[in-house]
Image (cartoon, rainbow, N blue to C red; front, side, top):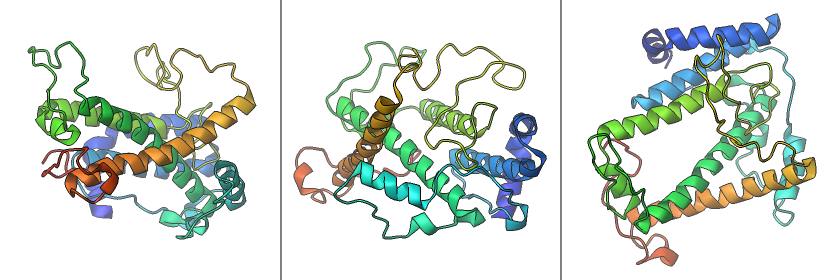
Length: 286
């Protein structure tokens, strides 16, 4: 794992390490610089290697190098949150992830990692669920998909539609997602990392300057038109709770669609509603 990580670091990380180190040295204290730099580097390694189909994974950090961090959430916070999300079920953790220390990080850091992962995957699943329904009903943009005039595919099976895209189009989509992943991992003065006392699920604004993006970006990924700038705290909290619940349901729903397509009859309620798919849904370039 370490050998694989180092190989990719030497090929892809020169520019990324320069940007990350500038941010970390600017916004971190001397005691946290080492741990923050190590975390940022390992996260970027996993993102970039996943984009090219490699099997590299996160490299664990040494406990001796772990610095004291501001804790955002603990297991007690998870129990309170669970009651707000679903008063009937409450805190349900059969795998005891609330007590885990993944990759040798502290329990609080692990909770931040898992909370952020759930929120992020829930958002992707909500977008994917809506996109699945749109594609299944033949809804597409009226303009050309590529510069040579190639139109959007007329395929109504979403996995088959992905297969019909050109390799260049698929690479563009995956690398754009990779950019968002890398950007979300870089700490700044106004954006603490979610494992270092930051808020899980928060996506940083696109910053312009010498130590950020070298050209202006007119809209941010979150709230591009600033509609939620003056939202009341109680309304924001309620919507964030709804987002988590909707994200969980969307993950189940999207996987249900794909499961029924890959194994017809595996989801009885969807039998006959979605077409069978004989490809590999987990292989984007198959």
